[in-house]
Every structure is written in C-alpha cells, then in structure tokens.
Length: 589
Image 1 (cartoon, rainbow, N blue to C red):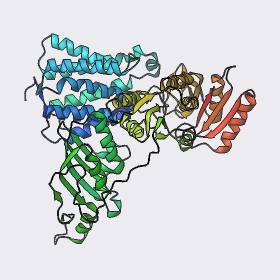
Image 2 (image 1 turned 90 degrees about the vertical axis):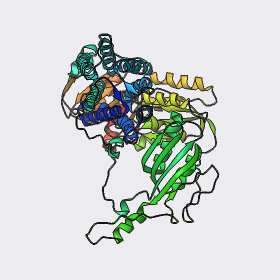
Image 3 (image 1 turned 90 degrees about the horizontal axis):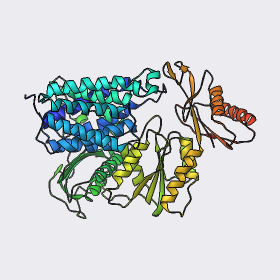
Image 4 (image 1 turned 60 degrees about the vertical axis):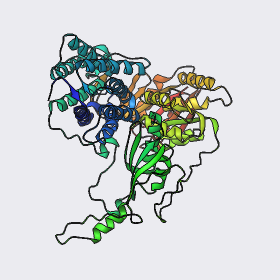
C-alpha cells in the first residue's frame, strides 16, 4: 500500500473506523460537558450524527467509488445531525467531501484543501462562532495541514500523525480560551469528539483490525436486535427490495423525505442513491406504500418481496434430520423475483392478497402558517397543542431531534410556511439546517425558525403569534418576545465540579438560569424557590411553574403557595409539564 495516496476503499474503511472510535468514546465525551447535568449529550449527538452517515457508507459494499462514499457521508450526516456539535460535525464532513468527491485518489495536497473547505463550511454554519470549541480544533488541524503541505510532506502516515498531534495540542488549550472550561476542569467536548474521529480514521489508515460493521442500535438509540426472532417479534412482515430508475437525481431534501417516509412505515431501512438509480430495502407491513411512494421519483425495476412471517413458519415445520433448520424461500404468487420495469400508474401484479392502495393522510386544509415545536413531557406537549401548534416533536434536553426529524415533522404540517420553535439552544442549529435544506424542496414549503432556547420562551412566542400579519412581522414579533422571559430549570448534578465559583457535589440539586447556576442545595423545593428569587425583578408580573414527571402534585402546589406568598404582586400559574430530568421549569415575565 502506498503511503502517499488514499483510494475509495481505504477512505471508506478510515471513515467507518473514525465513526466507531467516536462511538466507543461517546460516554467519556458526554462527561466532559461543563454543566454536570444528567443530559450531557455532546458525545451522543456527535455519535448519532456520524453513525447516520456510517450506516449509508457501510451499505455501499466492498468496492464503492469516491463520489458514492462522499455522497453517503455528506447526506447521511446532514440528515442525522443532532445538537450543535452534531450539526457542526456534519458541516465539517460536508465541506471535506466537496473537495475529494471528484478524486480517484487523495494525496496530502488534496487533504489540505479538504481540511480548508471543511473549516470554511463549518464556520459559515454558525452565526456567532466561538473559539475554544470544536471549530477551533478543526481550524488547528487545517493550519497544521497547510504547514505540512508547504514543507513538502507527501507521506500521509506522517501527515495524519502530525495533524492529530497538533489537534490534541489545540484541544488542550481550549480551557484557556473559554474560562468556563477551565473552571470546570475539562477540555471542549465537541473538540474531543473531533479528535477521536481523526484518531479512529488514522487507525483505519494504518490497517489496524477494527470492526467496522454498523448495527441498527448504533444508529437509533434504544433499538434492540434479536438474532433469532420469534414470529410474534416480527413487527413488519414483508421484506421489500427494489431499484428506482430516477427521472432526475434526488436532491438532499427529497432523499430525506423518501427515507423519512420509509422509516414511518417500517424498519431495516437501506437507501442508497446516485444520479441515476436509488436502491431501496425496507421491512414493512404494506409493501405497496413503499412502492407507490417510489413511483413519484421514477420507474421501478428488480423488485423482490418476501413474506418473513411465512418464511419463519416454513423454518419451524421443515427441520432437517441433523437438527438444523432448513431455509425455505417463500414466494408471492410463485414469483419472489419481479424483474419487469413499472411506470407510474401501472398495475403491479403482486398477488390478490396484497393491497396496494396507499391511504392518504388527512393533513387538513392548506393554510398560510403552521407551527412545529420541540419539547419533552406530555403536559408540555398538550400545552403547545392547546396554543395551536400543529406538530410536537418529542425531544429537548434528553434527546435532541435530528435535522431529518425536524424536516419530517414539517412535512406533516399542511402549510405554506412552517415556523419551528426549537425550545433548546442545542437544537437551533439543526432547525436552521432544516430550513436551509428545505429551500431545495419541490413542495414550495418554507421553514422559518424562531430561536427559542427554552420551553417557556417557546410558549411565550406562540402566545405572541398574530394571525393575518406578514410572515416576516410574525417571526420578528415572536422573536422579540423571547427576551421578555426569564427561565430557570431544576435538576441534579451527576459529578463534582465548580461553576461560576459555586462548588457543586454529585447528587446536589441545581437551579440553572439563562446565565448559569443560580442555586444549589439538598432540597428540590428550596432550590427552585431560591432560583426564582434570583430571577425576579420589579417589572415581572407572571410566574409560571411546570412540574416534571417525578414531582408529586401536592409538592408542586406547596411550592406555588410559597411563591405566591413571597410575590403577591405576581400571578402564579402551576401546570403539569411531565418533563423528565428537570423537576421544575420556572419562568418569570
């Protein structure tokens, strides 16, 4: 193997190795979050982002070309991007692949150019780039790449080793750039995640033995894989495969929409597209749904549908003499392989028992403006729906939705313009990325983002929605309303640390406000009360308390009475939020 170039096959191995190394270190990276809260999720967000791309790369097989790999990396990471760190990582990968996708082999000069483009793309994606973060580490890697290229380095082994070494040096300096990191005694978690990706990729380059298989539970949190399912465990009965001969290349938005639809009707999704064809594999209970959707994009060929439940029964009743199970292929109407090409509108002969009519989801009449919001907790979701929000994405502190999740939610709102309320500072970038990607959509639907950082801000924003106004005025008014809300949240500490000169012990309850730690103590109600006390000023008139799933209603009522006694000039509202992790969310406005 030449140490001077990287071909497509080696690039694939390096990327998968980088993804797996990040996945292996994600919990350690989570622990680097400055705030010792139980939802520290930088490692998780970055891992889910890169694993979304790794799954697509892995599905390309053993001999992919450079362009296909780059498309899988770019589109997969853009779709799967979660949290600020995940979005920035997706932009780094997007910029990097823009440079290398037209190359048959990659040398040091190409890598240097790709590092440059990666940093440029990522910095553009962040409205107010902050040094001491993943961006700084990426920039350091790019600067070292330039230095090595100018010096005439051609050996990629030397190049990668030196770039990683310097990246670690820059990472070690991040606490000097952000005082909050220094006080907490940690380096930047996103920067550490990037370093782990680079280290893993370098291991792949060196030929180290690495398991690069990607399982479903590494892409989707909580997914469980059973090697030998019982029939009752087979949730989706039909394995469907086909090729779409595309009328025109799918844009990123169309790919996301198509894959999102497949995920809504089944599982075990594999979808790989180039400019001419799109290969699809899905397990579902109605193959016709996938087929009818695919016909929107072109003609169908190489169709194969297997009844997995029937296959399972055949296995059970056809045991070999040696005790092993015989594989019996079950065919539909005697023909499992359907090779003809079908056009949109054609009747597809899949058998009398297969229903192909696609039910059309009733999205209601088309309207000018719709709303999508993000929150965790059944009570909070009900509050938003009661205020007129069309679709609530379950997520927030404990699980940041991906760009694809947001686009999928928007697709379910029948409106010309959809306003997204992220309600979390770590979801705003993903929402903005969804808005940008929607510009390539064919459905003329526009996405606008009101950058709410907390649930109370989102509630205030939707309350300030004025119908029949120009959409630009609506967004401006809702955005302006965000500044009128002070928010505090009560949770517990998962480790010892010092923040803003406040000593915090593992197990302490913390009251976290818009600007940092406001209260620490051993009693939940006391911490909530002290936190609110520091949020108050003479201009505030309304206090809202949302209690979480672990709080007893009587305890919440007692806190409300205590607040009312202290602030008789304010209206105090108590509502069930049902949110996990955070015992109380309190707002004052």
